[in-house]
Length: 223
Image (cartoon, rainbow, N blue to C red; front, side, top):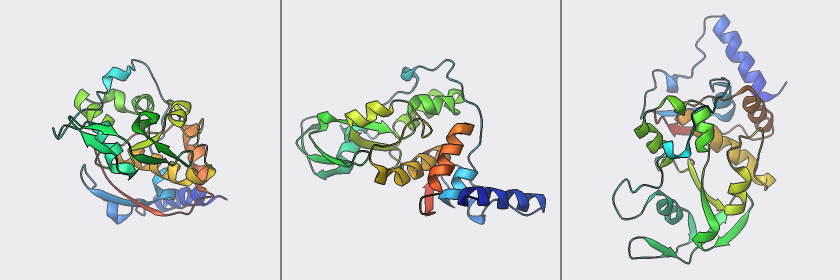
């Protein structure tokens, strides 16, 4: 039996015996609270639901805004935070030069124009998984989430466009060594924002995580 399936079975048995299935660190957790889980626990606790893309439009997630009004929008903030060789910044946050590491395909990228900022859980996937019921402000907050560095990633445009709006049952990073990190970050974002996962997605996450170190992951609840 896989490690995650064993954890899920233990939770079910505990519930049948009247024992708490929720670690004390997450009792009564509310937006802004910090939660700590193992990867296995976090996957097992994702709400499972079928997805619907009815009504989705990308424009319903206003993104690349300048929330703190410092002249740099969300895209620029991520580029500045993730650069391994800092770029030059001029004028109204115009970025030139710089080097970034795209962990999806394990390559270094020179120049911001060759990069996309990837929503770890794509906007369409978020819509399918619960964001369709959110307010416009909540969707904007999600699309510009600088509160957790795992929500957005500067990666090569080629990898980001290959991924499109697919979940881990359909797409994984080209770099095999990145996949445990990728599913951990995917799970964090879904958990942080209270998003559901469909059955195929849960199966893929479970199977992949069985070969990963069951590290503790900590995140703050966004909603």
